[in-house]
Length: 290
Image 1 (cartoon, rainbow, N blue to C red):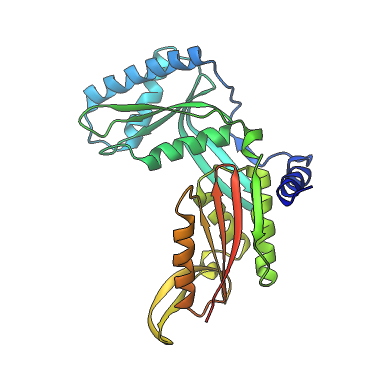
Image 2: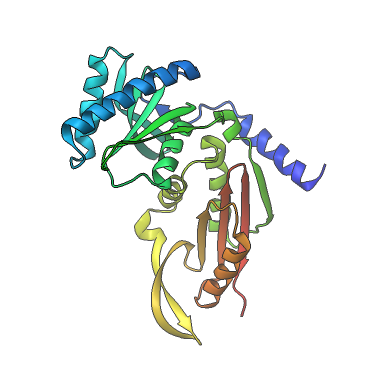
């Protein structure tokens, strides 16, 4: 069996095959809607958004639009409307709470914004909620502009597919007990939650299990010719070992060059870098050279 195939086999045997409940809890039962049913609900909700924008304009906070949207959807006799749907992601004593704006008909996720314009960050957040709930379609609506901005956000990935990951660790090696814990923790988190989720969730979990932000995020000296120039805030596993999480599909070689330059201008011994890009997860250890 090749090294790559062995890694895939190991991943499936140790994580996909466990008889554990995946620790992502949604505040109510959800169901994947047919395209026809979703479009019917999305059309009605978008009509409500235009009516609200005409009534209130664009200058109110998101909370008003969310409350009014939920109320108007109920008046229209749409299927059950859940306001601020709770989603909890957990592992042991770590817990992260999210609240999706609206769930209509048990399966139509609606995200509302009141901003100048929608950005990729808002689309990524909506996808994040789809991945966590196991749904495949959402409507993203912005009421903060001169006119209503609305977009569909969708995915074909199932929860099982998000956990089918190609893990590459050929360039990773332990630099101490903390690095071993970090490596194991990331593999466990990915096994429990899957990939494709937003990076802050994984960062928050690592911070939690390594003692919290005050302990992990530290100022370290930046050196030139051996003399301190300033300080830089860094995520540390131990006093001489940093870690970095990314979700890059390109530019990896360039970032690696910059990470090596960073190391040369600090007193760190190593950086453990994990890139989480779709199905590909790469663990890399970078060592400072003199």
